[in-house]
Length: 121
Image (cartoon, rainbow, N blue to C red; front, side, top):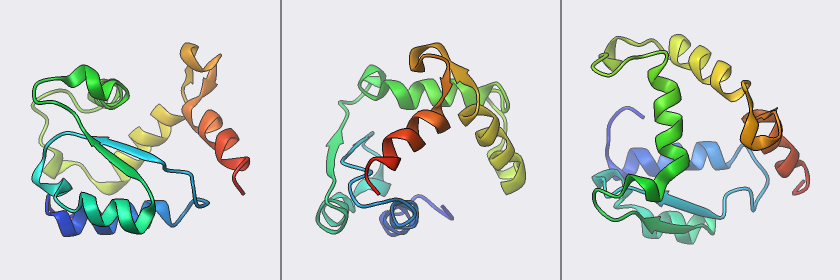
């Protein structure tokens, strides 16, 4: 996203959602950032239910916090993301998403996700 505006979030979510079958995304749990002011449009247009985590309750967004921790293996805390190229970020995400995970019976997140999505097509 070029910035943290509601418009940019709405466009970014639309781009991602358009790449998968209808019904892939059913809920979204967010923090209370200003970029989610578009939540009513997201719910109406994409047929998702948007939930807001309580302030200072990171456990309510557990998978997001876990993903942030995995990303910190590549870009330690304090790293300026303005200096990270799109290619560097894509490489890190590709490696994270293709890493086998015990909680997924040693499937990667990509394998598990694509398996679930394949039932929607």
